[in-house]
Length: 416
Ligand code: PMP
Image 1 (tube, rainbow, N blue to C red):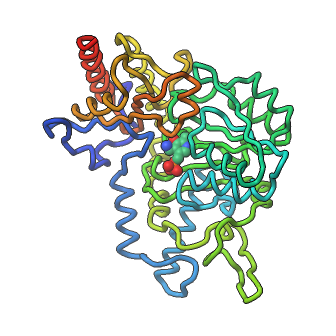
Image 2: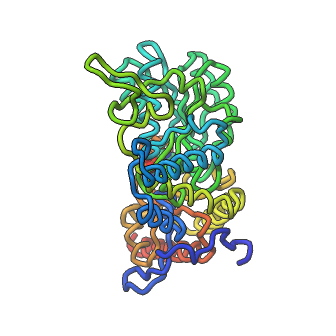
Image 3: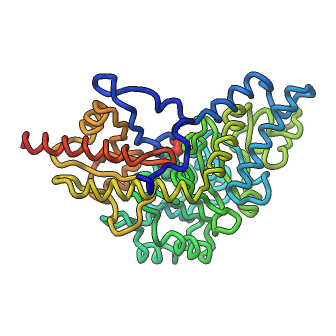
């Protein structure tokens, strides 16, 4: 069991004490960290501390609490900058979630810089967050969305990409890791570098990868926009980031107007504040952003590489054992190293029924299209079951999953 010893202390996660399942007496097996990670005591404590001591609005007040709240909020921004390898915290825009970040890139940058005749290349393994905003940009600003297809195993089609690169796309939208395929695209780095050489900006969705320690060293990567969500990193819902390169940020315009984003307003108009405030109108999720920093600290203490290796090892073990069960088909190229999750279908069992059957046993996995319909279409299954692992997951979580799926396959064989 030692090789699977979790790098994060399970005692830190109070929710793991719950008993669930059909009879309400089974230990909670949480295999849905790819949707939202569990929240540790220290993050809960950070929220509580903030609410009990410095609960004030940021930036505008001249009193002690406002100063403390501002320091905590800006401290979280600085922490995010160092966590993601960004030398200037002003390039770390604080938004609501990864989806909000994608939309800010599309409408803050795309709508300003791109127009009819311009192409945005979108990878087919992207989450809807990194697809629909570009389709909306196309609809409203005459930009063309062109796809970088994936093959039946989920791998990006390098040849198709190279043909597309000849059309000089304005931006290439990619995922550091898909939330359905269990691997990081092996040719991702090549596509990013070729995209930069073709003159494109590169947008990398890190929402999934960052949750298990696969974190971009942003300033050293050929990336202009990087996206992450706090709730996938043991933080709270409501906080996310759009990290920008200098060049990208320079050409962006605010999408939302209001308080906090202006230098001055008069009857004639307004003058926009400097970065990053220009892009952060209104009162943000202050407590959630402050608490995000506590979650980052926990990941850093455990070691990002240790978390990544652990989640990958459990996912690989689960994949190997599930693949041995009759009637179970795994999604994605089995030869590639697993990152943090495994998606699969069970012959004769609809994924939603599979999700309910797992839930009966206290196993919380996810079933559906996982906000990745183009991906599912490309690999030829309408929906799937997904089990995802984190730094607090254990080998017995895998055992529970495999045992429950095995019972399901036996049931399906009886029905057939
Ligand atoms: N991208 C990826 C790869 C994701 O997995 C998710 C969440 N499922 C998102 C984007 C969207 O994140 P959020 O819902 O926090 O905006």
